[in-house]
Image 1 (cartoon, rainbow, N blue to C red):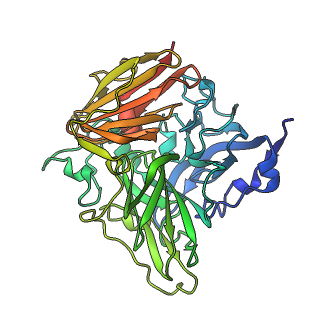
Image 2: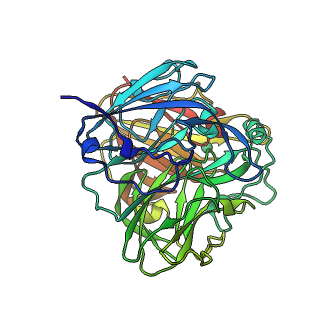
Image 3: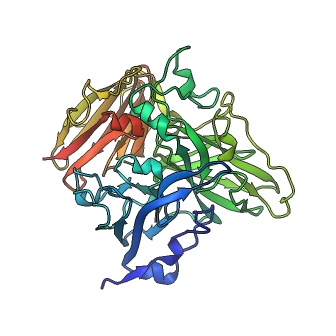
Length: 480
Ligand code: C2O
Ligand code: CU
């Protein structure tokens, strides 16, 4: 029997924005139904997260980010999408394995939804874990059409608090336009000691950087982010999404070690303890910490942007309301931060990934991005001329990237979970299950493997940096 129900407990929309809040357990009624029914309406929103910032954005159901959606693994999700954006639109369900017609890529998997019209997305969200959803019609995602969806895993260790944190920023539209043409003068703002900064030669002109005028967590800027109260003895699970369209985000909770358990919602081979998370564009990390003593600490996005302080929220124990929260410097030297090599136990340079039968293998050189160029390329071509990957069902597929540019590229494959098996010539002893992974610059390499066992169709493979994607760094995996 199929019944519909509104999953009220699973949707957070407080005070016009999704505030930092614990995921409440699914109510018995919501957990018991087979189908979760809801409506998402996308419409313009005047977004003012910080004094002096007034942004004409777009929002799902009136909030940036959109509502936090939560379903139990096995439930079906039925979303009636009402497009009031003023333009064509779609919703992409990032990290989900779902029927191709539900994947939400305009003119590839569906006719875009015209303004004023509706579309019904219906599928059983899988795999379990921290996923997200966003518009796939540029520039709507950077304007505010994104949100987190958690597919609850019944096998997960229960947490005392389960906190969803979306890191997002307000892009400066003029800088976006300039970046698309390769003539942006916005500087890089990655923290000192980051691989992003290290990749740059002195005096390099970037051309593709976007400037951001506000830095938010769940729709608010510090000090307006509502503090999170925790108690000594609690084990807290953080689910962190980097919804910034172009920048890697480094996230640190002062004075705490984070135990990372999931990457892009998928369990890591074994948990990794770090001081700082490194979250590429569109990536998600689940990280835990235990409150061992009273205190007040800042959970922060680290960068050298003068306004970086805005991307912070206080985590504190009761009675610490008057205390100055402990913060972190924007420096990564001597700090253990999350890397794929750490999580996947990278072996020596020259080591080879496990030998196995490979049916289809494709190599891509990532290139382009010269000053004043509007081309970011795969094997010298821009979308839609890029080389496609054709697969048969059950094929074992290998994709190898060589990055000739001086930027990291968060490469993303729709509709699949792949394994990262090689990075910069080092095999991973424990391959990482992911849907988005940063490929290192200046000759960096990465190899993915996956089995073509998803529903048939055309699945995009692209750089999730919005500028690079729109300037051509995109291809597709097509089932024959
Ligand atoms: Cu987050 Cu083409 O997707
Ligand atoms: Cu890129």
